Amino acid sequence: MQNERSRSWAWWASRWLRTWLVPGLDEDAQRTRKGRLAGALYLAADVYAACVTAQTWENEQARLPQLLIVAGVAVLGLTLLLLPWHRFRDSVLIWPVLPSAFLLNFGEGLPGVLGHYQPVYMLSLGYAGLVLRPGRTTALTALNVALLGVVAGLGRQQEHLVELVGTILFAGVIGEMIAAAIWTQKRQRSDLEQLHAGLRPLLQAQTESDAARLISELAMHVLRADGVFTMVSERPIPGFGAGDSGPPADDLVARGGAGIGADFSGVRLSVGTDPSGAAVAARTRRHLYVADALSSPLVSRQYVARVSARSLLYVPILVGDRLVGVMVIWWTRPVSDLDHFTDQVIELLSIQAGPVLERVRQVEELDRAAMTDSLTGVGNRRAFEQALQCLADDAVLVLFDLDKFKALNDSQGHPAGDRVLRAFAAALAGSVRDTDLVCRFGGDEFAVIARGDGAVARAVLERLASAWSAPEGVGFSAGYAVRQVGEAPALLNARADEALYAEKNLRRGRSPAG
Image (cartoon, rainbow, N blue to C red; front, side, top):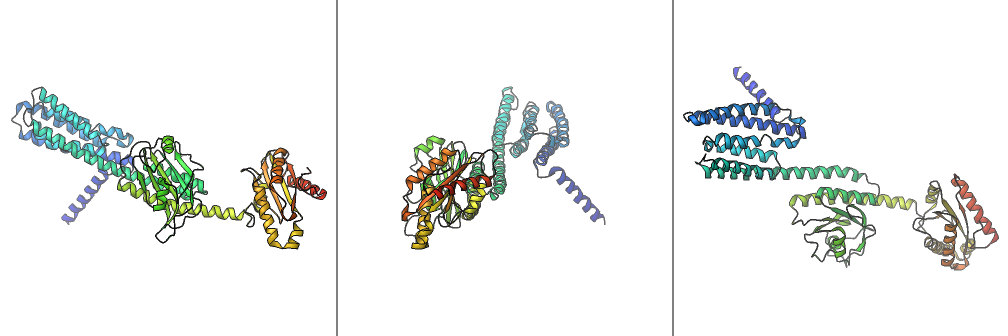
């Protein structure tokens, strides 16, 4: 019974100690843990100092300074244990480290007993490596050596001087190694957290351009690059294996970017023939890293000058073995090499980005198919009605109807009529601006919805009149209407329809009546 009670007390005591030293995992809790650890180390060093004081009690010159240091270190250690570290910033963690340098080198060096305190250097610089960023432990090591030099310059602590300097340097190296390992682990964890956080909005992307932009932003942040742009294949690129007869002929087109100078809209390259790094990565399905962009034949001089690129990385975006795009990533500073963890992050990003790009492309293709006339390739009735309900205040509507089309169908059959419809749709699409919408909303009825005034409609009709040669004797009639302020879409459509049929009744073919 007595053993069980003592075992229970030991278990509760160890649990309380763990909770006290390791209060949690968030940033405030980690700062509290590091601060309390500093207090615990000071108390441990204080116990060690008390033992040294007892062993060197006969040294009257060192007795009083050591007793004062033992008392002061005890107060300092208890203070560090009780401080509300969660209220401070991380930069405060350097302050528990600095007093140790002065206490050691002056408090124990001036009496000449510093040789007994070499293990304390290990504690001090090891803790510095645990809580400080890489490089600061080296600075603290230099401070200890400098203070020891001051003590030696005063004619004190002449014994064990070489051993003390060696201990400081050795402890500093160990502390710096600890700091580098912890900092690398933090960076890797931060990269993974950024990657996982960035995947959430990426999975919600609705368009190919948005997905490409989000992929570029995510890659830039995770890889700490200065810029990224993502190129997407215009259509699924076939496999490029040993059994293929030749290289794929598909183009890659820039869709979205991030970073300064990352707007490469409209940039296009041929996967099969282009010698650039992006095309090489697309053909080989492998990452391609260019450490020195200035001297590499894979990077154009114009591109290097535009974004001041010094190192580049080309990452193919795959779905299985099929390529759907390529990320072009650059740094304005030379990057000698990419580590294994970075390769894993890139691989994970590529694997996640591929299905997203494919999904949004499929959705866009379905939407486009639902709004496209299957025969002519222009917008269908659904697209026409949807655009009619979203008219701009300065909209102009032009309606077209083919003359003698029914007679052609009756005399030569529907294949001839289909040929005429396709030809007219192509001629009409070539007569409008990129921002104008062309639709086929009936059998031989077409429409153009544009922004502007009557001059815009007349310009479309003039270009169409020059492009349309009336094959099989089929002409066209047209009528247009410019939207008035606050006019309902149905009324605008009715006025354009009146103009169309007024001209059709007059049989004037190519001049609008109204």
